[in-house]
Image (cartoon, rainbow, N blue to C red; front, top):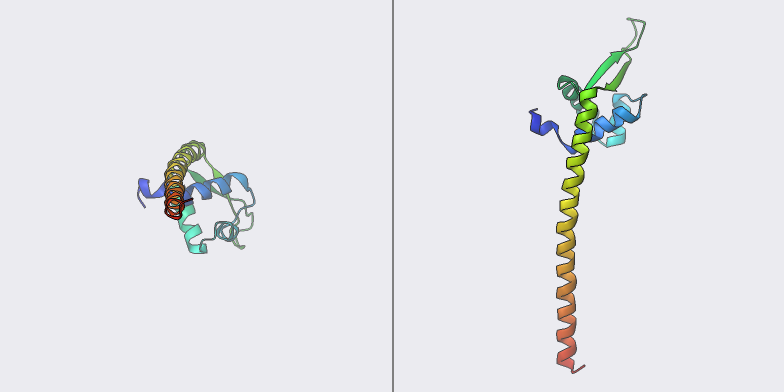
Length: 122
């Protein structure tokens, strides 16, 4: 996963969940984001490699399954803010584009209605 691919909407959602939910585990993350457990694992590991989150083992018994806590790092918090800004800018551009398309449809519909009315002599 390269730097550009990591900055996806999914990565932003993962960072937000890690930041907002201290009891988060991979299964819960996969359910909340509607992604596979394997993908949740992959995204968490990639974000950790980039230093955006860290794993903390809080299991005191080495015989038991590891209990991990996911924590957003300072770098992760900064990147989450930057990603949120870029995400909002992208959505704003998409909204403006769709608004223009919609307004074009409405104008075309009004022209067609006026044309039909003219032909009927109304």
